[in-house]
Structure formats: C-alpha cells, structure tokens
Length: 400
Image (cartoon, rainbow, N blue to C red):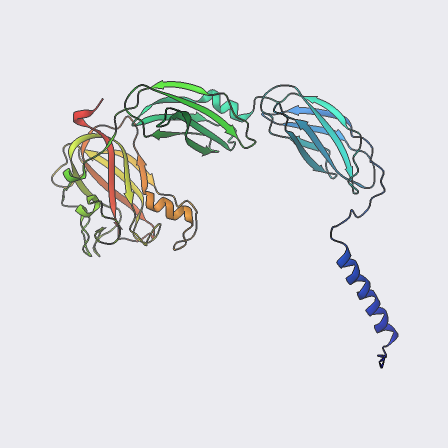
C-alpha cells in the first residue's frame, strides 16, 4: 500500500485545521448556549411600585446592577391556576402585566434574569387592577328583538379585541353558542337570526384574548316573524331614468334563483354612474335583509356593485323622479382579505358564494317598490352586472 502525501503551505494547513475544528464543533453542538453563564444569579429587583389600569398593571422598579442582566420577568397565577408571565428588556425599568380577569388582589413575582438564564430571588408585589375591558363591555350590552332573532348593541370604549357570544337553544334543546361576533370597534351592533317568532331565552357573554369569560346575561325576547320573500311575485318596473340594459342582461334574472353565467343583470355602454333599476316586490313588506350575489368569476372585481343605496316606495312617480322614495340603507361592500383586484383568498371565495348582506333597521317602513342604486362598482367604471337578489322580511299580511 502506498501512502501519498500532499504538500501544503503552512498557511493552508492552518486554515484546514481551523475549518476542520469548526466543522466538528458544528456537528456536535445542536443548541445555542448562553453567551455568558457564570452560574451566579443576579441581584433582586427592588423598590417596585404598581399603577393599575383596566385589566393591566404597570410596575415600575429598580433593576439590579449586574453587568450580565438580560431582562426582568413578572409572573402571576390566575384564579384558574394558570401561570402567566411577561418580560421586559434590561433597557427599561417598567413592565406591564396583562390579562387580569377581575379586580381582585394578585401577587406578582418579579425576577431578574441574566445572560445565563439564572434567576434572582423574587420580589413580590401585591397589585389590584381596574375593571378589565371585557367586563366593561358586558355592562354596556343591550339586546332587543329582531327579525328571526335578536339585535345586540355594545360599547367598547377601550377598543379592545373581544368576542361577543350569543347563546340559544339548538335543535336538541341544548343551550349552546349560536353566534360569535369578533370586534375591536368603539361601539356597534349585530344580529343573530334563525329563530321562530315565539318567546325565546337568549344568553350573551363576553370573552377577551386571554380567554377570560364573563358571566352570562339572559334575555327573554320574542323574535319578529321573518321569511324569504316570494321571488315569483317580483316584477321589473321600468322607469324613464333607470339604467339602460345591455349584453343580454335583464332585471328579471336577478330573481330566478339561477347562479352562474346563464343570465344576469348587465347595463349597457350608455350607462353612467350613479345608476339604478327598479322592481315591484308584488307585496308590501317590512324588510329585514337584502342579499345580492356577485357575478361568478368576478368576485370583488370589475362591474359588481360596491357602494350602493337601497330605496323604498309605495307610490313611485311614473316620471322616474325621486319623489315619494325613502332611503332604506346605504351600504359599502368590503372584501374580507383586502387583496388587490383579481386576487381572492378562501375567505373571499366563501363570502362571495354566501352573498353580500344588507341589513335594515327595525325603523324602516313597509314598502312595495325597491330601487337598487349603485354609486360605485369594483373597477370604478360605468357598468354594473351581478347575478341574484334575495329579500327577507315580514310581508304585510303576516307583520307583527
């Protein structure tokens, strides 16, 4: 057996040795160690003072002077026994502890932690937060009967992320969550539907982002009668200044329950914005909802309506003027994902298939004739086209 030697310059040999050791070290070490670990815990945090907030407490303290101090952490235990902790860098002397469920007293332990993850002895401070935001929202909750269910209004002064949960009886009679409304707006309202027009017990509770859950408020309400209006009774009403139609589009296609591109409403090249069309529902009704379905393949794009007004009348002027019309609702469609035109998320697809819902307040009058007015489409152009309209409410002969 012959052994061959490769002659290398001293510098190359040194480089090879260094690279070899580096490679071996990289293979053998599978985790990062602290940059410095002297095994000695840092000194304690001292002189801590607490300033309470709504569901939070801000603690000011004097950190230890150890040169290897990395951060300070605050640890407390919830009433359910969960341990929560918050960290603050060594650059500051304040730490905000969040997620308190109530206004009880809590013991918060402050630890100094060094670069070797060595913990100091705890400094314990007793704190008492103010009422947390989710309980403030609970105090503001109001509920009234609505079409097919109830309408819940709320005030969220601190604009916190909360979930308002509506409970009701399912088909088996179990009292369970039937709707969850997520919000961080200052005030608002929402409806939960799908219930018969009979005395019903509803529950409302509030949950925050730390899964703190309020007690349940109970409401005894009788929902208003609501049905899907009979589309076979709906007829187009062509008035002199309604938008001219083109490309095979007709108003009647909006009420045939046919989806896809086998018939749609489509305006012509002579149309301008704003534009409108008119139809006769064939009955007077107190409307609760109007749902429109965009043209398939063009969700949140091109000529589908984006900003609209829904007007009602019982005696429309034959000259097409706006005399005797009342505004029932102004509405803007919002794309769930916010993606640019032509790009759709799964949420966009699902929302497009479900249809865009315009809800009407309980104060709107009973009307027979509807004007659907488009102020803006999704391309800021002059055409309007879409597939279907479905109306819900209480017809005159069955109104409460």
